[in-house]
Length: 342
Image (cartoon, rainbow, N blue to C red; front, side, top):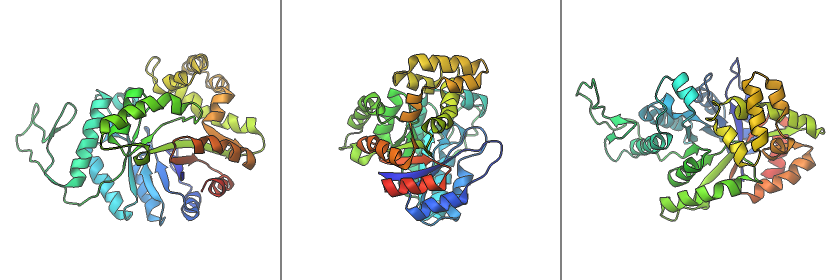
């Protein structure tokens, strides 16, 4: 099992803990992952990190597909890959309708269709076997729709690329199956090694079967983000995990269209998920946080003493997870995970 470092996205101010990142590089961590929502972007931090590290891969976890044309993402990925000497990993996601339509101002559309077309276009550009031409439901290249000049020309990238690994963020059964079919890796959120294998395995098996060619878990990386907090008081540690769970389960999506709330329900926390959402949408964020079950917070994180973290890591080792992307702010926790996991 490989280790990654999750630097996430910004709060009100953008900062990177470069000493922590360079320590992860020194310790032999596989990758460092930057994200984006509707504040800082995922690309700029990765360029900054790549310039100050030597071995660690730089990965987007995730770049929002609706925010960029496929060609722009392909160009960005190739540029970062060249400048980092082949260390870039392209993590993608469709985001949700609130961000896509409310922030980027584009149609949310059909996420499965968009994802399939997007991945196909990226791989066509990177392969450079032919000029880019794609006429699908979401992307029309060269553009031939209303208002077209008629001068669009199929082009081939000036910059030569390679088959950069593509990881897809996915939660729903159909999107997880699609990730297993067309991607090199999968980025689940709030992964519980106790529940997720049962919840997700049918979708993964379906995707591998559709891919054909002998695709299997051995050729597919499940890369999960996990909060790690080192401390003697387990309850205090869990209380630090809960605000993010409350934010996503309660507030990241409209009522009836919250993928994270749906996931909590599929894990068996239906009653708690409803309570968290009711409280969060009513503006009672502290109460929503308090309503997050200890059991859920504990299953999706690694917290407590070094011995407790070592013991609970056994469930992750027994799961199909290939890369653990650690959300960690303590240098001692970083070094502890390197000692017991690498």
